[in-house]
Image (cartoon, rainbow, N blue to C red):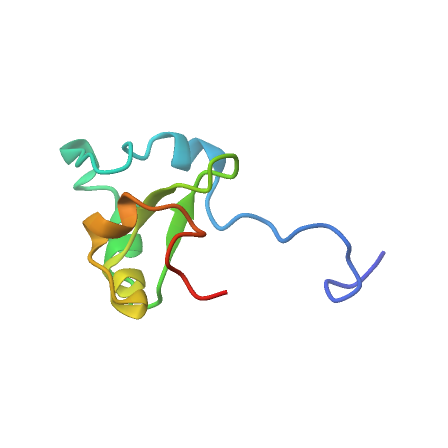
Length: 88
């Protein structure tokens, strides 16, 4: 069995498809997830994190740390895709 360094498989996702399917659409604020510990962890995490659509490359969700890192507001980034305005 190959070690993680030797594996040719893509890395495992950080969140399950089931959890991401529950995420609100870009720009929409869903108040039903206020008590969701994963959402609180995502939003309050000091590490920059984002979730984007693999087909369109549009941002679906991101935390404030991600917005600060790239110098845009959260709302500005939610109107962009991964290739818009980010360094190569």
